Image 1 (cartoon, rainbow, N blue to C red):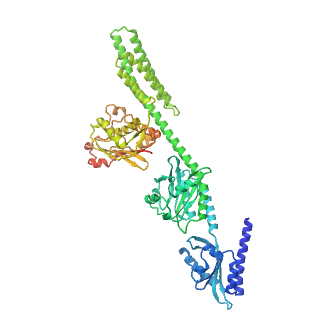
Image 2 (image 1 turned 90 degrees about the vertical axis):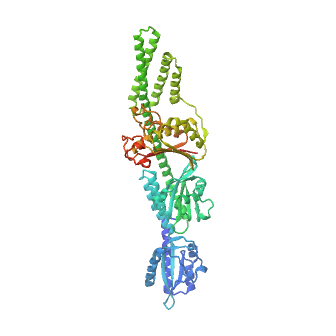
Image 3 (image 1 turned 90 degrees about the horizontal axis):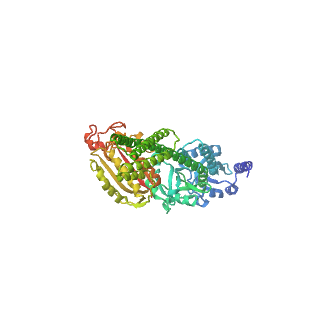
Length: 635
């Protein structure tokens, strides 16, 4: 039907209603004739006596509001919402005074508790003696019309917002607020699917306040559980009028948050060929969810699905690109550091060969072959130093690919050092150790994942490492809980755990403590190593994974042993663990706080709580700083 036709029909209906009122006044019709006339009006009609007792309702009233004439005749229908009582009383006074009233917009309840937006036209009824005998009201249901108008306004606001919000989180928060207004609910939630893990998680929760919303951030659940899980799997909307009667309602959400769910509506968040999540609203403020709510929420869902997916992909690409840049930068730093570290032993070897040549000449030895070997070794060592210098220069160029240069450098070291040792010494064990070291650091390795129980593995590892840290006066506390096994190459697991434990000792002063905890979590086994040492400043903590964590200067760690306080080291342990996490299905998280007594990186700790004049004993040191590293092995 065209818009012009709709307007014409509406005008005709309004004309019929006014004509009916006019005839009622002029002709003083009796009650039966009134009922006959009002019966055929297309809108709900209610006739009642002056004491508000119902005398008649027409079939359309029964259809819209749910009561039958038999149920309400002679009674007072209490269907006025509290917020409309005063307004209605005032309007009824005007009606009695003016004998009629038109276009009164208000709200009324239905029998089943729904609240309708309505328009009321009314008139007083008179008998043949021109005495008022009652009133007649004609209602027009504006609920759908007003909802659609409101929906169009909100959809327009959402469409405009899609281009103004740069961050997905801000966009979703805005959309959730608009959904709350549109459906009139207590809570609105948008959940996305994590397909690799087969889970649903809360992308946004619009609820009572920010603290309540935060409770949903860490909740994840299998994508086939709960009402939302069923909607996600089926791809069809679902209304739950009473969750206490729903066998598959997920009580975990209620238990872990302050959301007390009474009823809910969920619709799928769908693209053309797939479902990417679910939009759920809970606790309708007036009445129960109906098909109109489902249609409105589905319309919003269809509008926001593509922008959400695009924004999510964009953020993931940005995150990946940022991590890739950080790893590339860190890699270049590592290569630069390795190249720099090679300079010292190569220089020492060069100096040693020069001494051999000098001694060779001083003692007048006449063996051309030995002289040739020494000169060749010295010449190639100088070549390696030249390559090293070129590497340092080239690494200053942003787009330089360091990996190939490092391989060439290492290959050169390996070949020339092999020739040198073979010709200059009979101690083949040194050569073997050099080769083994080079191969272990740079060579390809075949490693296979094995089933490991951390509760058994960690104590054995600590026993193995004890000889290295037994000279330290640090209390080592362990708390082991039986967990599911982890599947990882033992060589990698040893590097991970040994590196973290060594770092914990090297950043913890004597008479302090280190805690090692193994526990089972919902996501899998977790290893937590906490030291109560000097901690990292915010700047240095940011650099650990974002760039390259610079260790103490070589002069600091070259004179100390592993596990000594502030021994430092190459500084690659945490970076290496981060790289391992990309391949071996675990996550690493670091929480650290720099000791408040030495807040700057250049501030020094005496290395022993008893020697710290600013620290009030052990408890003071324990509460002043430290680092906690969490390794979450994912299942």
